[in-house]
Amino acid sequence: MILVILGITMLVIFIIRYTTQVSAVHTIPYTQFREQLVDGNVSRVVFNGQQIEGTLDPPLEYRAVPGEISTIQSFRTYLPPIPDDRLLELFEQKGVTVEIRPQNSSSGWMMVLNWLPILVIGLLTFRFFSRTSAGSMLQSRANLYNKEHQRVTFHDVAGLAGVKLELQEVIEFLQNPQKFQHFGATVPKGVLLVGPPGTGKTLLARAVAGEAKAAFFPISGSDFMELFVGVGASRVRNLFKKAKENAPSIIFIDELDSIGRRRGVGFNGGHDEREQTLNKLLAEMDGFEKHENIILIAATNRPDILDAALLRPGRFDRQIVVDLPTSSERLAILHVHGRNKPFSSDVDLETIARGTTGFSGADLSNLLNESALLAIRRKKHEITFQDISDATDKIVMGLERELILTEGEKRLLACHEAGHATVAAFLPNTDPIHKVTIVPRGRAMGVTLLVPERDRYIFNREYILDRLAVLMAGRAAEELVFNAVTSGASDDLKQATRSARKMVLELGMSDEIGHISLRTEQEGSYLGDDWNIDREYSELTVQKADQEVSLILESAYVRAKETLQLHRDGLDRVIEALLEKEQILGPELISLLNSENQPVYEN
Image (tube, rainbow, N blue to C red; front, top):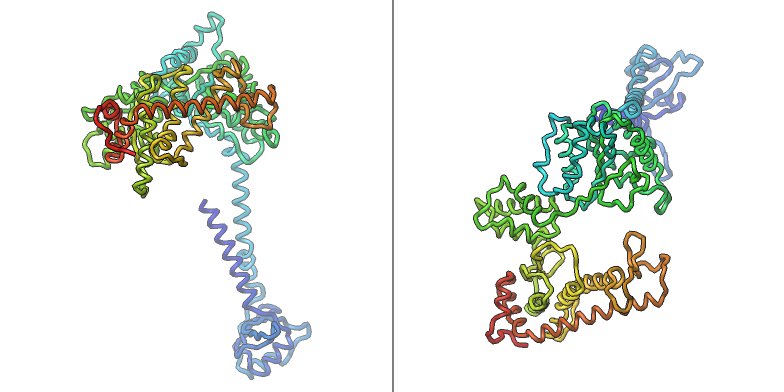
């Protein structure tokens, strides 16, 4: 880098010096020079062979551009072929200072100065291409982590018991391959870890290498791609060469979908460099010999777009799903990430685990880290439950915003959230209410947060219908209390419409449409999401589906409004409590709704 900067600097200096010389020294005819000499305007001359350079005093004026007068002070001219015998005499008469330099005395140095920047740039270019072609660019970017550096084991991975059991065979094969050879069994050469981001796929791969005490070569799929054609294939070749030299070893490719997409698809056809890299990867996996103790582990969250050749037997023929952690697994992850953190006595990690449904391992780690940062910011000595609760709100809903709302807007917002909370409290198939807040966070003006008591994997029709009624309750409360329709329900309507469409088009929960799935093969798009795709159903089916979606949504809205009318007193109390406190926790909300006092707020 220093040489590059030096070369560029020298080139700039050369260009500036050359342009300065060209613009400052003017070449004039010999006759004009002699006239100026006779007139006594030449003050100094330098002879360099046949070339004469000098200075005019006073400068010579001339009209370079019409209407503009320029001057010449430094000049250059050349001696004529016929010697001028009176030239030296004129110099002596006019008192001109004469300097004579040996011919070509400075031409060598001038040549060096003129060519030096070009030579430096040429050497730098040669060095760059020699390095890229000979080694560094074609070398794999995977760093070797041997057993001395590999500290991660299954003890560092909380939960995922089923996944660990599946990977145990890989560990035993790397430790004792003769055991499998005795029974004539083979272990998959490639293991594909599939799951959402942050679920611990990379950590699992490191733990497998740590348990097997094998060399570990981690690399991202994007590291194979380069501007130059053929570099990706060369890096694949170099990576497998290193793995064979350090066997037993594990190669881990993260984000496999960046190089393993289906070939020959896309808006502009296939990508030649990516496909060449993929072809080389397939060839190297086929080149594994049975006695080689090498396992290839890859991770992706998009298995649906991988090329079929990657998933056939003999390559990535074992797929292991690394899903989001369950409640018990979240508790174990919280214990792992909370080992070095001071918690106060009011912190119950089991409660936090139940309330973080949908969090990945990375999310839980980030949650405890944000809690620690909040405790430090508040100058506490321990992390309290309030710190963890605020950190959860920050992760789920975003940063708190400062908005200037009028009294009417704030009351309307409280009415909207109170509608969600009231309907959620009285319908039988909804999740428990964790909190209701009208504090703006992220893109939301207010939030009603429902937290399930347990992880849900199957959703019945009644649960979904009650959930739709809760989503519609904000709009219903606005109309019931203020007789107004506002833009505050836009996100609720979007979520409700998506759920209703899924009921009709995928889950077969419509009496009119029947038990049929109208899901397309284009990455999970549903009927009506893209009208340009080829459909295997009639236009009449489309109309019926739209009618069913509208009917489900309208029914949910009516049910929400009827529930609010039935419990209007409780709704009014919740509105006033939100206006006073801005946030209500679940137990306090239930207490307000069960109170027999007269309503505080009257429309």
